[in-house]
Image (tube, rainbow, N blue to C red; front, side, top):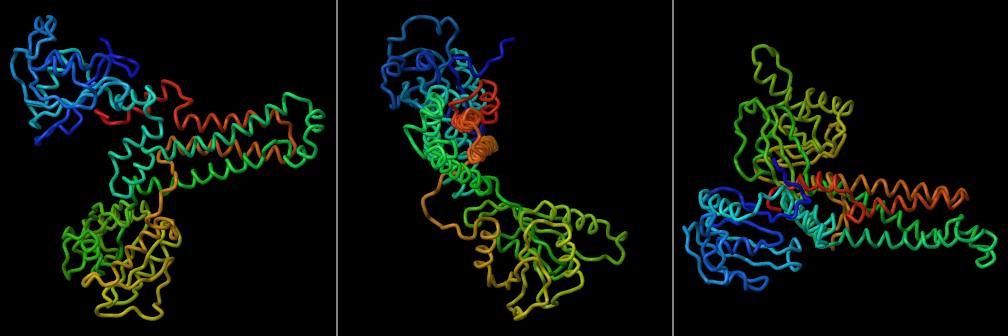
Length: 492
């Protein structure tokens, strides 16, 4: 059996929209001869074949016999055959297309049967099913995208918030690619000077450029290499926030029963998801939902009340719920610990803060709830690892300030809002290569400062350049590319 590969040049097709009932659906095709193949099963073949790029042609997709598919007559302006669906076909001609090849986007009706029927006709005409990410792979191979922009395509598809979308669009527009090329340009200058130095003896070099030997620490243009390292480190530092905007953070609401955890959960979620009563222990297990706070995707979890059961064996459900809540706390990125302001600090609250100080690494925001009834004391006797903040989960008092506090705790507190986005890396692959580039440049500069020979420094500079080149795809292997693009969804 023939197994298609990413290096296969056969025209490909895929259903690019979810296979579900909808008003419209999109089927995408690309490859050499793709327009000709669609013309074989289109009611107006001549109009399609003569259509210039970036235009739309109306007609019908037809089911035709094998004999009819192979007969001449594409110069006619209509075909006979069984009508499958009424469509609009967007025509793209390479190289002015997403993939750099000839391509079509077929807009058909969104019924599941209609979409499958149109796709079946295309396969019969000579297309094959596209592999995951194969359209973007072809765009990369044809020089339409570098790897950073290719990866940003899937980041854009999976963005959970508008801020995540902005960061993905930033990379898709080439900002990261431009920054990496700028860093590489600095290293090219450093390597050029290094190669020049290696081509001559030290005596000849010293005669022409007196004093440079000592000032450069045996590395010509050392300042440029240092600047490159600073910019590489800035990219490495951007990774945490970029992943936060993409993957989100787990924020867990914890506290004693009847402290107001579920009310706070519903207030932040802006809908009634948790059951709220005056009866302690109503929430027996944790419940979660996704929200967005200042552009950060947050997986918010409401947990069972933490307290000591006098007879644990008699309420195994509540015991299991508390155990699961403690497990979730161990995985959290931020904890919102709610104190019942009416009851004040209890021994169980103090026990939690002591336990948190011994084991948990997540930051904690302590919330004095019910300030509409009991104001936050000037000096609350709370021995927590974080600030104490007054809120009312009933009236909403203090909630806007709390959301700002949550965003600051998860991100960089001083980050400016609305400014032009700086270049940032968005994948584990990019982070690993940036770290490799940084390590190579750090070692090269350290050796230069130790007055070590240039012939052991130059390979480190090249290693750093190669790592940067692999980020954009200038340096790559077929195996690495196939693994990377196979993680994309079909139709992209």
